[in-house]
Amino acid sequence: MQSRLAVTTPSVPTANYSKTYTNTYEKSQGCGGICFTREDLFKVENQYIVDGYMNLQINGTIQSQKYVTAIDTFKPNDLAESLWNSDNKDFKIIVDGKAIMAHKCILAHRSKYFAALFNSEMTEYKENKTSIIGFPYSIVETVIKACYDCDITDFIVDDNINLLLSFMDLHEFVGF
Image (cartoon, rainbow, N blue to C red; front, side, top):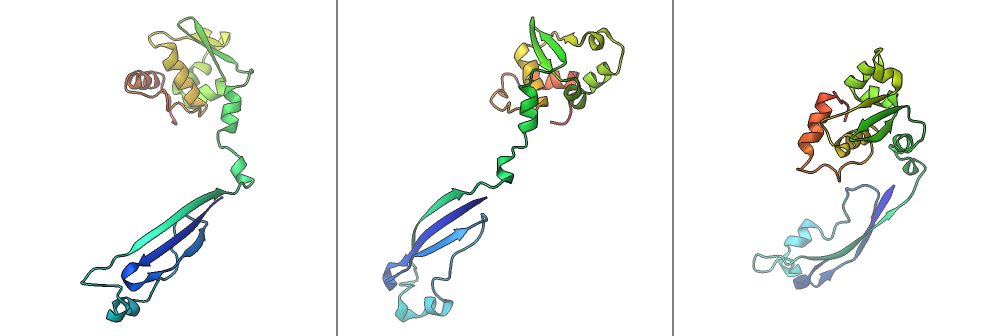
């Protein structure tokens, strides 16, 4: 949970008005107190409005403070990241002579192509490996990492977006 401490000082120099407000907000919405009433604002003798103008100055600071709760310590991608970093992957994808290891269940869940492959008697399924040609290792690895909900935003750039989409389309990746 995050709270914000706002210290604001609205002032109207012509009316010799200045007041400091301190408020704590638990949500990203809210407002402080009332500075002056509508009646006081339009009274000529108060000089809030002079020659048809009001010079309202607001000075302030907002400080943000995060309170850690039990729910905050849970990261939605903890399971996916731990699976990606695990050593018990059961399927090898060979690209440009290099291997990318993955879990069959993750691949089958994210790709119709791999789901069909794993429900067949093809050699790739029996040997727990396949080779992919026509795509660079970095493209294939990025898509496989995305299957594990890894952050791939730094890799998605204009130079490779078409290859990423082509690989995903060809191998029927879904759910991203």
